[in-house]
Amino acid sequence: MSAAKEGERMKVLSVGNSFSEDAQRWLHEISLFGGERIDTFNLFIGGCSLCRHTECIEKGGKDYILQGNANERLREISANEIIENEKFDIVTVQQVSGLSGRPQTYEPYLGILLEYIKKHQPQAKIYFHETWSYEIDSTHGDFAFYNRDSGEMIRRISDCAEAVKRAYGIPVIPAGDFIEYLRENVSQFDYRGGGRSLCRDGFHLSLDYGRFAAAAVWYKTFTGETVKTEPFLEANPDFDGDLLQVIAGALDRFQAANV
Image 1: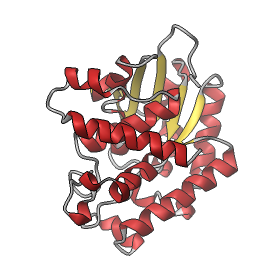
Image 2 (image 1 turned 45 degrees about the vertical axis):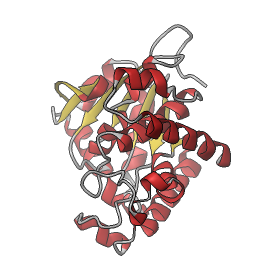
Image 3 (image 1 turned 90 degrees about the horizontal axis):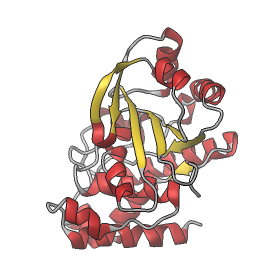
Image 4 (image 1 turned 180 degrees about the vertical axis):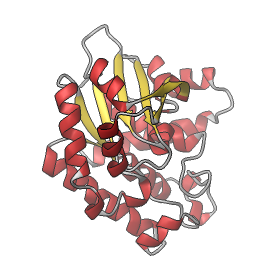
């Protein structure tokens, strides 16, 4: 169900980092061809953890870069400025990727952040963004927390996301689970078996299909609509239309299996 009123654009704010940057990249454009347009805003600090977000809010400094639709850099800003003075239909939060499967790193920071958002954005629906596991050959230093095992990493991320859902009653955007579903069920993205990697550097999503897949999950989670790939392809002819259809079809199957 839509979080915005009929006839209005949905405004989405992410208190995030480069992983929300990845997920938002194609979200606005996907929405242009659907039933409801989404304007995206990302509070960006690279590698920002829940702990650092709370420190930034307490300090009130202009530590963030505010990104708009398609990751356009808008201005330097404090989280306080936008959260306290603008209104959003949806606000997303997340843990930094390397700590996303380590439950001991979530509190008290997540609770503090959610309390602050609820106070200043009472009309907004809050979502927890479940991020994805690193690629099987990732050289990221934090991969060691998960024994350099991508499967172990996504299992632990999923467990943490489920714990957040239970503790705070907020829905999860299952981007990490869907990326893993593509890896395991779609031959074109079976990197272990010779397919494409959905990551560009072992942990950030590929600029094309990885980012498209994450944005598709966000769009379907927020609107319930199937992603329309043909008009998207017309506007972005560098994409492979067959692969876009594969992702959209896989997302419908993934959602049906996880209702």
